[in-house]
Length: 222
Image 1 (cartoon, rainbow, N blue to C red):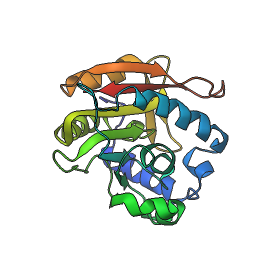
Image 2: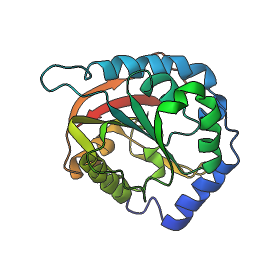
Image 3: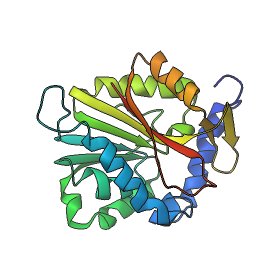
């Protein structure tokens, strides 16, 4: 990120401190915009179902990884209905503890709860059909994002897919002091994917979000 993140250690520790104070609710996970959850999930489901299935080149439905999973909102409503097993990774233990009750009976199909920042997380090699990374890449420096995507690629099964769904700025990189994150424009995100040795096979903008929010784009990456 060049000079945007001057102090990497505090960039991560400040983010951790921010999330420790957020209530473990859907509204908390969505920064007070809990009302957009269904629109978000429906858009994600339509996107993902383009790739899943049994045909040539289709992505399997064995195991998915939810990155920056929080209390498991995406696991519960998007991933568990489509995959046999889901793993969750999040930096905040309280959120993962809450996920165990929030997921209810569906939680029996959760494989692992990993409490770890993505900059340090090494997913198991060849385990996942889909790695879903939503609203969390802004908490990684450029170099850490590139490295994490490379590790994700090694963690995919044949025809596996990495999906990034995130806010994009209109131009450049916009820091958010409050939660210690950054918002990058689409060209920058695409260039980081490319630097990781990966390519974007499909890309869509999420529709019907409130006008005051950043645009949200979903990228399918192989």
